[in-house]
Image (cartoon, rainbow, N blue to C red; front, side, top):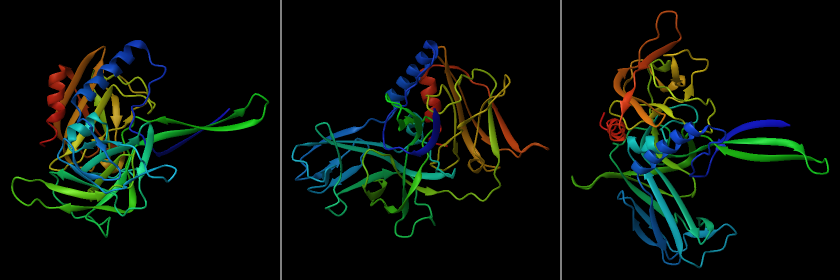
Length: 362
C-alpha cells in the first residue's frame, strides 16, 4: 500500500481526533480541551430571512451587513427557508491560544492580527455559500484594538485577507474486492496550529474610530464560509533570525510527534507591543531529560526580539506552567540555534487562565 501525504488549506472548524492514545493521556487531552472550550470566545448564532437580509450584531460588537439574496445553495439556487448563520471571532491573544490560531503564514512569517473570523450558514442541514449574484453580499465590520500598520503586501486595501486551517491529505492506493486498483484520498485535521495563506486580490479597509468611546474597526466582504478568515498585516522584522529551542526542565508531556493529535504541552510567545502570537510548533526529537520541548522555524524568532512567553502542560490531570519575559538570545559560540529553558510549576485552572491572559497586555 502506498501512502502519500500532502498539506493543504482546510475549510473546516473542527477539533482533530486523537486515535491510538492511552486512556490516561486521553483524559489529559479531554480536560485541556474542556478548559479551552470553557474560556474561549463563543460563537453567535443568527436566524435570517434570506430574502430580506439585515444588520446583525455579534457578542464582540462585530456587525454583519447581509443583503437580500446573499446566500445560495451549492446547486446555485436561492434558499427559501430560514438561514442559520454562526459567527465566531478571535480578536485577542488569549483566544488565539484557546483556538490554537497563532498569527503565522504558511511561509513562516509573522502577522499583525486585526481579527480572525469563522462563518457558517445553513438552511436546515444543507451548507450554504455566499451568493455570486450579489455584489458584496455579506460584509463584516469587526472592532479592533490594533492600530493600522503600514503594509506593502496589498495595493487596493489597507490590510490583506488570509485563509486558514491546515489539514493533512493522504492518498491510499490498493485493490478493491475484485483486485482492481483503487486510489482513495482521505484527510486528517492537523493540530500544528493554523498556517495562513494570503487570499490574493482581497483585503479589508481600516475604519478609524469616530470618538473616544468607540474602537477602530476593519471591514471586508465575506467570500467564503466554513473556513477561517484572517485580516492581518505582515510584520517585517529586519533583524537576523535564529532557530529558538524552548526546553522544559520538567513536566513535559507531549508523547506524540505527529501533528494530527492534540498536544498536551505548548509554548507560545507574544512580541512586545504587537498583536502577534507565535506558536513554537516543532517537537524536539530524541531529547534527553531537561531538553524536551519545541523549536521555532527560523523566520519567527529574530535575535533580540522582546517577548512574553508561556510554556504549559497537562499531565496526569494536573496543570504546569511558567510565564516569563525574555529576549531571543544570540546563539552560543559554535551553535546555530538559541535556547530558552522553562521551569513549569503546578498551577490551578484559574492560575493558568490568568497566565494566558497576561500575554494580552504585554
